[in-house]
Image 1 (cartoon, rainbow, N blue to C red):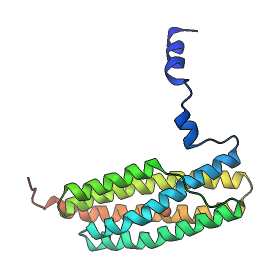
Image 2: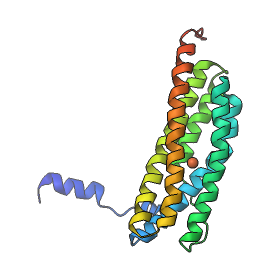
Image 3: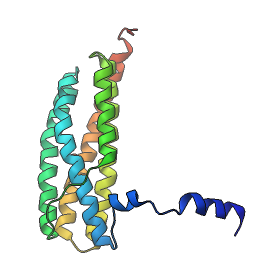
Image 4: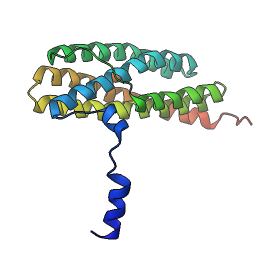
Length: 189
Ligand SMILES: [Fe+2]
């Protein structure tokens, strides 16, 4: 074994108990359920965060957009509960660290800055990161559900995936407006 391989093994192949604890699955069906617990938690975190983002937004379209997505997100939680039921699994939640971090970044934007269109632009950036994360997560579980023959569950996951995609597009459109307006905003030191 070459030096590089030996080094790689030394640094990468140590079992990390934490990793196994976060998501341990012996087969694809188990992995699907683990992924669903993660998204279920992520969506519930978002139900709590979106009202704060709506409250902080200055631009009316952005504010409305956050409130509309709050209602959609409650629907996503409901759909996931249906998916667990279709899979004959109890509804369970497992802390999604990624969503926690993404939401924290949005919260920091609110705490560290006064309300402004520049802050709105920052909130949009945070919100789009959330949407992209969810698009990836739903794409993953939808594909697994489909492959494992859970057609109805896959259909529900696809509906949410499409709504996340539509939200992302709406945010891009609002960003164009907000960014243009933010250019003319006085920089505050
Ligand atoms: Fe969602």
